[in-house]
Length: 468
Ligand SMILES: Cc1cc2nc3c(=O)[nH]c(=O)nc-3n(C[C@H](O)[C@H](O)[C@H](O)COP(=O)(O)OP(=O)(O)OC[C@H]3O[C@@H](n4cnc5c(N)ncnc54)[C@H](O)[C@@H]3O)c2cc1C
Image 1 (cartoon, rainbow, N blue to C red):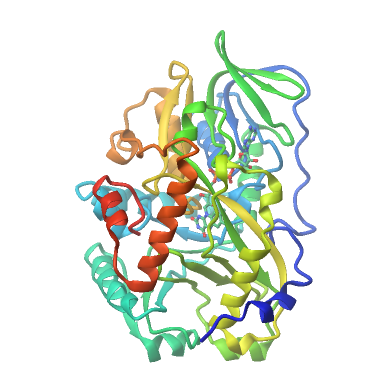
Image 2 (image 1 turned 135 degrees about the horizontal axis):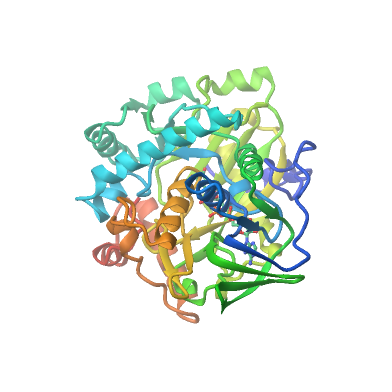
């Protein structure tokens, strides 16, 4: 079926340029900006999931620890409030990727990942945080003939590592969710589900405030420098002197120069539709409302919302020369129109449906698709960045690992090769941009032909991602 870009454009006419999740009247009032100098034991920079979990965990370890959190915009402004809400146990960007990069460590990574999401669920329950979590698993679909065998191999691998996965043929997958593009599917019922990311962030914000964390929003940090007894952190209006600093700024311009070579900011685009009618819902099925993805390198992820809309994102990930992350990049007609056309190609029975929201968010990609952890400034600053599009669950693990490193604690987490070894650095510009485009083209060719070309196989040999 051909892609009709022009026909998709009217469906976007009324879409507001804002993330759906945070665009609601019950959004919490932001905390006051920092306007006067202060001191603290731990300063967390960044009010996404990583920063929020770090603040909460620091208070759980030592309730007397004086914690300040500075967020440049508002809590959930970044990827944490813009994502698909797929809640996954994986710390290794999937089982296959984990097996390729850390074969000996994979059982430990799987166990730690399962413990992590179990503890998140327990925490949400004990705090009374309703983040709309449903442990419904997900379905990956083949939309190209060569992906059928890839899914079969993935089913076997998931089963070998204890996941509940089954293969569905075209009729079976279409009886569940109906699209003429589906050739087969892998239904995984374990390992994760879906949630509402804004409700999660706002619930964690409440939990952090209840523990005495001092949160200041609209307080962008502009610089750091060593100061007795730790680090002086400047905002536009004031300075915080902190014994320790935890950097949780994801793909935004890093305050620590060395992170520029480790994290690539990639814009990922998302659409949300108006609520579906009963007849439209019947036309697609999807009674379990699980998360859906297709199997390529350039893949879509999609899901239903609590009010029966469809969130549809992914595919056209865009890198801008020089790591540019200015906010006018969040609306890209070409990417949103392509997404809209692909939506109607997948669900032609929904022709006429309109989109209400369009946005983009920053994926903090590393060269091996898992975060980079470390310390700097004499061990007084710790960081966990680079979750590469899979941080809704893993950000808590990342925050705890960064706290371990910052405290100089040796734990099972800090001993992992995934933590100790840093991902391969990206080259600086002007080499970075053409290299990223070249790799994207190679990934697209693999999606079309089903064959991994020489460039991607060379990257594989150096342990550089791109094989998930
Ligand atoms: C479109 C999209 C879809 C995704 N879908 C999924 C998914 O379905 N499942 C999944 O597991 N993962 C997904 N991810 C990834 C996931 O959202 C992230 O890995 C996770 O939210 C990272 O959290 P974070 O706190 O590290 O970063 P962020 O949420 O980006 O938070 C960083 C914060 O730091 C603040 N900040 C930056 N610089 C400064 C500064 N100088 N001073 C003060 N504050 C600063 C920013 O304003 C921001 O709020 C997706 C990501 C995107 C973009």
